[in-house]
Amino acid sequence: MKNLDALKRNLEYFKETGMKPNYSALARIYDCDYRTVKKYFKEDSSQSKKNHSENSKNK
Image 1 (cartoon, rainbow, N blue to C red):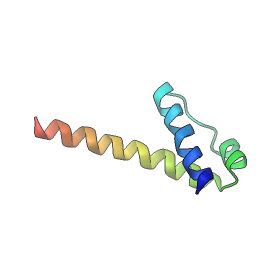
Image 2 (image 1 turned 135 degrees about the horizontal axis):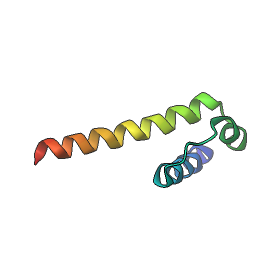
Image 3 (image 1 turned 180 degrees about the vertical axis):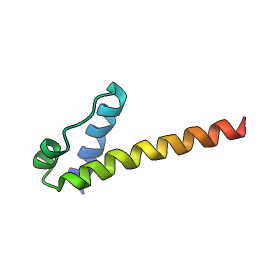
C-alpha cells in the first residue's frame, strides 16, 4: 500500500506538468505491473474529467 500511495503522488506530478509517464520505468521503481501504473494514471484522469463535467452541469 505504501508504494501505491507514493505512486499516486508521483502520477499527480506527471498530470500537473502535462508529461506522459513511462509506465514500465515507474512499475520497476514501485515494484508493480506496468498495467497497474497505467490504470492509476488513467483512473485519476477520468475522475478529474467527471468532476469537471459535473461542475459544469451544476452552473
